[in-house]
Amino acid sequence: MRRVISWLSVGCALSLALALGARAVGSERRASVPAAAASVASAERLLQARVSDVTSPEYREWRTAVQAARFGVDAVLEALAGDLASAQKAAILGSLLDDVAALSSVERRALQERLSGMVLAEELDADLGDIVGRLLRALDTPEQQRELAGMYRELDEQLAAHNKAAIVHASGDRGFVESIMNDSAQPSEAREQAIERVAELGASQSLRALGEPGGDPTLRATALRAMGQYAEDEASLRETIAAAAEQPEVDRFGRDVRVAARVGVSESSVLGKSLVLCVDWKQRVSVAAQQSEDELVSSLVAGKAFARALLSDADARAAARCIDEQLAPLISGLSQGAAAPQQLQLVAELSTDLKGECSLRPEPACVDPNDRRSRYGVELAQIVRPLLPGTGLEHYLSLLPVR
Amino acid sequence: MKKMLRAQSFLLCCAIASPVFAGDGVASIFGDFVFKQSAFNHTGVLYNPNAAQVADVTTGRGDRSLSVTRNLADFDWGARRIKGSLSSAQQASLKARIDYFAGYKVRYDGNHFNQKGKWFSGSGGYWEFDCVGFTERIYEDIGVNPTNNSYESGWGWPLTPGEQRDSSNVVVTSTLLRTVKSCATGQATGPLQRIDLTTGYSNYTCASRYQEQCIDDGSFDSYYDERCE
Image (cartoon, rainbow over all chains, first blue to last red):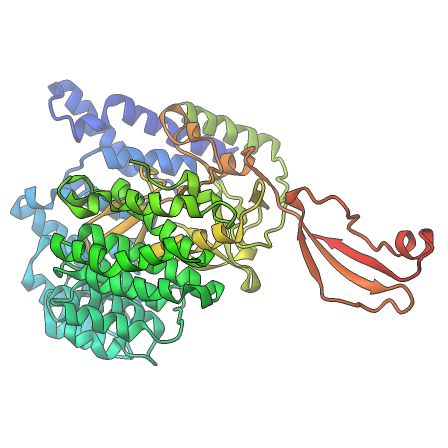
């Protein structure tokens, strides 16, 4: 019964907070003075409402209210000192992320000190470590970052994995993050974060050793994804794909190293990236009839990365070359000859992937009538649709894009 | 607000009556939905039946909110299978979707505003899902809709694991395990067969059929030794 009363009181506080207009403190700033004062009061109550079960409906309602509200740094610092669940602290800190630039110098300093204190004195979990690292980075204070890096070395044995990852996340010191990345005594969480930071700081070439076969699959997957994503030329993209093209290999989270590499390449900003994944996908389609079930799945994933690369490639001419020079002979051959069901599935899936990408992450290429890519998904659908009946692939008939 | 009221009445009901939830259905095929009971419940899909591993999106994992190695034993609220089952091509397509998203950073959507997935380009790019939105999304991508769309927006928002579990588009999972045995020796004469009972197959008893197939029919050749899970 105590639990019920507790739930109800939290629920009442949340309802009150919402009713009084925690939202008005946030996105709508034209509230009257009395309403604004009431909103500030309700926002403070929101920050003090402890909801320990993050899977409960109360937590969902609380988090929704927090997301909609805007809090002052003082109120946030006071809340962090209270008895809130870790997920609540993460949510409250997350609400500050978009407003960091608008903070006064006094507020920035107070927030930096509190975050540094959290990193050095409290054990952070994955979610809280992530948001603390992002905030520290957004505050962009090199001096503070250097100090934290120094403390990392000093307190090395005592700091927990996610605390270390938060410090690395915040650091702009390439020498420091490279040293963590290459230190096998450091926890995987910190080394993975270091890999990403090294790549972001423009040194993706130094990830090459970690991406080589034989290493820790988790670090390898992260390194290859970062190498692809932050590559500076086509040769580096090819090198990334080649490095991952060995045997199937999954990390401790079940992440396939080959997938991570292709995802990285597909997200790269290198002009002509689509050609790299175009050749990769074409090769897979040509041998699909002999592929095992697992290899087929891997090829379907390669198609998704290719669809993303094709639509987001800033070099429209390279994308058109992929379609007209690389793929046209292959697709034409499949439509005229006896295409294996696996090959038809790869083509049908690519067609639906192009449609899906344009719906989820619309790129200019999706809608530009002068761009060859804007109609390619439909063209593929028109070719493959008549070939599907009787192949076990009939479910694609309702998924393929139409003009 | 409807959901909020429903949640509060649910909590009151449960606190007073403490009903026992039946964990009916056992996941055995890739793609089976599995459910975990908690205050707001949780869901995932069976990813690796041989290793009893589940793909799920959950809180507390930072950028690794999507994992495909969660222990099936964590899911104590039963399992469901999409009505009519999936073709092998659909299974491959479903698995490819999970693998693809697992190649990215995935964060948990604690607000449930982006349940079925939203792409954010900041922090090197990441996807945001919640647990039930992820499982719903990957199925919808292959042309199958586990839960009516009315639960996903407007007054129906947010979609919950309980709504997916109770949907009329999914059925309680059940698999027949059958071995053909010799009437004379009782030894197996072939490999263990796994038969999906959600497809409408009806010639089974989930027990030994020695009496029926060796004695009653007078043949005394072989019989089905059956077990259901």
